[in-house]
Length: 209
Image 1 (cartoon, rainbow, N blue to C red):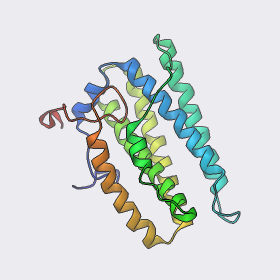
Image 2 (image 1 turned 135 degrees about the horizontal axis):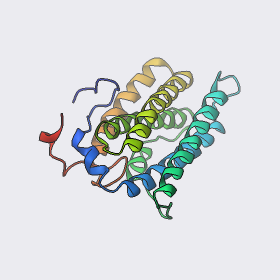
Image 3 (image 1 turned 45 degrees about the horizontal axis):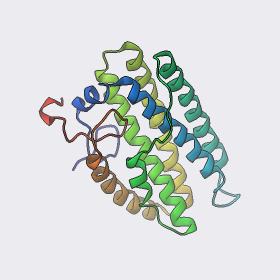
Image 4 (image 1 turned 90 degrees about the vertical axis):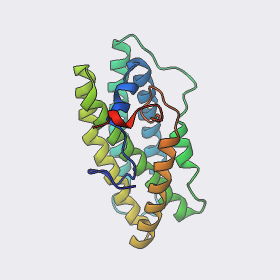
């Protein structure tokens, strides 16, 4: 596997996945809204778990991410409601759940892994938004996903930056490679559907550009 051009991800989402995911834009927006909510909650939870009072920039970084994700949630829900949809109970992201099972126990190890997993989710979301923006025939949705691409790229970088503040460079690099390899397998094993982190087993790679 080789890295994508913009991100360190070890697998690339076929462009054809975008059209498949957009087949039911309401379902996609519902899934997206829950992901933004969970991302905001994750940042707020990490805010309470800073390694020590001397970790520079921790509070500022986590509150900034939480604020952005909450803003994204508001944007998604506005789009959803305007199009006749609504959030539903019982949402579950198997992709995120599978990644979080890789988080180790232990104060430093757990904090490092949570930051890296958060960074991975942001990186994959960034890639997916780019694909959606490139194939969407709905101008409003296309512009929305294009705008989110830059924000998710920034969040991915923030989580990686904070990871380097809680563990030595070599430890971060080694663990990052382990999680990157695991993420590539996890995303490809997800069932297909109209979700941001759905799989693409049923999408022909020959359609990808």
